[in-house]
Amino acid sequence: MANKKRRREFPFIPRIINPVKVEKAFIFSAETRIRESSQILNENMPWLQTEVLCSPQAVSQVKSDRATVFLFDDTALPLVDVERIRRNNPEAVLVLLSANAYIHCSPPQLAKAKYPYTAGADLVFAYSTTSLVPPLIITSVVRAAEDLINIRRSSKVRRFIFLVVDDEPRWLSQFLPTLYSIIGQRADVMITRTYEVTLNFFFGVEEESQIDSRDYRSRGHGDDVVCLIADIFFPKGNLFNCDAGRDLVRLISRYYPRIPIIVASKAKEAEDLKKAALLLPKGDPGSLQKLKDYIHDFSGMGDFLICDKSGRELHRIKNIQGLYRILFAAEKDTKRGRELREIMESYGQKDKFSTWLYMHSYQELGDILRPKRSQGRRLIALLKKHLKEEIRQLNAAPLMVDGTKVLSLEDLLQALRTISPDIIQPFSDNDIISSWLDRKGFSELAEELRPIHGSGLKLSEILAAIVEKWLKAYARRNSSL
Image (tube, rainbow, N blue to C red):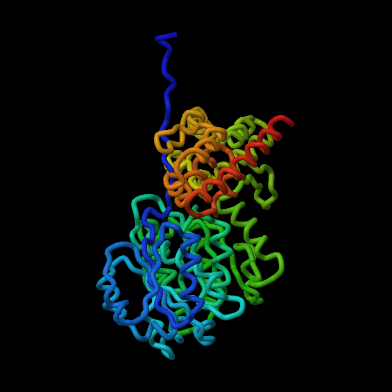
């Protein structure tokens, strides 16, 4: 019919966690394997230009107002004028890749006292010629620098931060590649190495006594933290080997009970914190899978879990349609309904709905639900109303790729096969394709695409092959229902 109403479409607004990309990486190092790591960066971070410099003078001549990372080793960092580099490059992060065994396992104060040049670095990581070889860690090192730039900028978009607290660069180098492989482009990582720096990051204060219990959310970055991963021992004041992690867990449990806490330590003192945190013994077999499962289940990145007060899992929900359906059971005047309403109230108070929605790219819906503190059936009615509206919009929110509307997996596969790889690349770099897939309920496919970066026809072919594989898998799954 000529007068038939045109179907209304809704915009898909991707959630990009790092609007600022590191554009240049300058390497000044005597270590051959660090210099050769530029090839790894070119493959895994194709938006990045790398340059190997050969003298302190060449480093001093670099001037840029763009996001930049400088990579040094123990030989190179003492030779450069750190302050001049910072003046010439206000958006720069200086990174030390150290082979020094003392620096590997020392808190920043002790490392600085013995090796003053370490104070010139914003981030310090350990490398070795055996397990921590530069090619294995270099991508995570630069990603940590990029995260730091974006967190410092405090961009207007809501941030999602994994805060890692540990004073030993050795463990940070071991751990970050694993953590980034789990979170992909869905959150940033911030590293702190002392109690005081951590306190300032969370609350914007220098001492615990300065925390305002009535207005603590307005300062610091605590409201942006989605997971805390901390050692039990790190410096506090003049004590370099005290159990500061105990005080940190106590504070976060009090002020930010929504934040899942992981205590990464084999120390017996950690056992006292097992009611408030997941204990993750460093280096134990199976610990990495345990970490991945916990992050997916409790930081909003995986399924939405509904658990009772004892922690027993009652429901595991994969998409907002499943969350919407469970609300019908929660509004009934039955024992199960009352139990679900009580759980939902608790989840609302701890921002669990909004955190999960944010992580699955429902930013506007997360913003709507986040400040709500309703109770009982009123809360259930509120959730149903907004989830129903979001579900209504889902099938009419296309992913726009070079003027082409992508509304289905078939459309996405066709776009990947026909649109120029240069146009496709930014969609992969910034997690835009996976964000759209998350909203559509294809979380497994989104998860497989997230760690993939590259350029040219090879990237498009890899992405297309994965989409085609899952297109068939979803078709088989639907036919068996």
